[in-house]
Image (cartoon, rainbow, N blue to C red):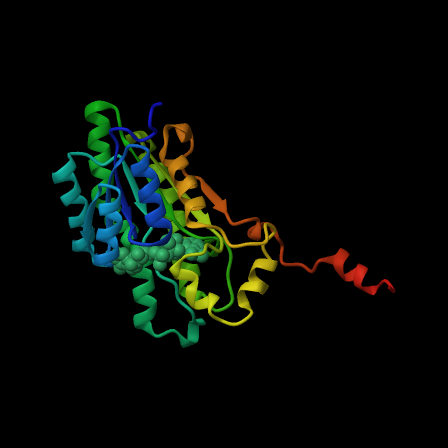
Length: 267
Ligand SMILES: NC(=O)c1ccc[n+]([C@@H]2O[C@H](COP(=O)([O-])OP(=O)(O)OC[C@H]3O[C@@H](n4cnc5c(N)ncnc54)[C@H](O)[C@@H]3O)[C@@H](O)[C@H]2O)c1
């Protein structure tokens, strides 16, 4: 059986945990040489060791550190075929209450880091395409929260919306360079990122009731979508926004009319 990512080199940011770790494992399991980048050194190194990959510690909100991560990989591997910009942090707060430092931090980690990595990755992929006809693939983990607004998620909503349009920008500018770029928009996924909200009594029951599939997604389910987008099976998909949310975003937000009518019936 041919492995989907045999002889491909992949870089997964935020690979120490959740969606990134699941993606790193899946890509490596299908033949990719994977480098994991994360702030979290011990878990990042552990995931990397488990898949025979490489771990690079970096705070991707820092432009020099993020650029160095790509330069380091290129020096080690000689090429970068798949870039998964996945590291991210959540944020609660309405606009007037948000401390400017919190605003800047979330924008730096969730949005700027993607720009930082692409500043080096795109020219390298373009050069590879010109030299040997093989460009590269970029998958950016955005969010359902980038497609509409949530109560009290202000800066996260803004950053993720920008990641979606940055993905489109990169796709149209660099299609000619053999580079495909797509955004994944997960809904609620059971990872440490969602844990603080999961700890609010009763919230998860309410949240999952609003999801047509009736449950949170798993990191492994997101990894499958990322792997598909990174694979040759998605060779004509670029500039797309792929939603994987258990159906949550399909709802207009209007009441369940049938349920309301049924509740009025006697007995
Ligand atoms: N879990 C969800 O419900 C959900 C929903 C939609 C989108 N997402 C997005 O999915 C992506 C992955 O999140 P997850 O749910 O797997 O969460 P997670 O917390 O399990 O993983 C995120 C990883 O990013 C790393 N990270 C954070 N800041 C960093 C920085 N400055 N530099 C380098 N690494 C950094 C963390 O250390 C962590 O390992 C994020 O972009 C998140 O916004 C998650």
